[in-house]
Image (cartoon, rainbow, N blue to C red):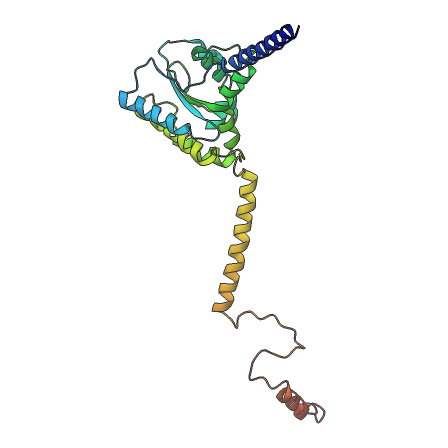
Length: 270
């Protein structure tokens, strides 16, 4: 009887162990997200590919786990153009943020080509890709041949002023390997400067700049006024006429009173 009881306990423990093992295995069964270099246009030299790999190796230390993929395509009229609407770039002008607004849905489409996951059920993988993966897409069939598609994390950190400063650093038409590397490096620099902390900040907005400019104007006016008064001390004097003058040679009004007393009857004799 006791032996059967021990066997039952042993069986329960064994069953629990296998349940834990299966659950751990299922957690780790999620697809691994690794940086992708897919150069079907053959634009990149071996050295440039190594450079992109080195950039991603260093980004492994990034606290927000960013990656930079490079995808070049040689299929004219491919379906990627179907996902681009260009509404933001046409309405607000071309910039990194407006181009990303127009290409927002491309991240899901492209990632499915290289990572197998269910877009509906595997929400965690989909979220990781959205938060971590930045893609340099080169496609001659698109209006803008080189499109840096940034992660949602990158996009949240790229406020109005930062977007204004970073956008001119990109060439959205040049499909050369040199420009692809420049695009990768610009993204990498921004990530290392602004995406290395859980406390994300988008930086300044244009409304903040207006306040800063107004404050600087006030400071400049005050500084100029003090400088001008030092240069021209006798030109401007604000003082109470009833208060003693600041002139060290002033006699507290004695001579003023003496003069008035001597001449107060001058008009009466006439």
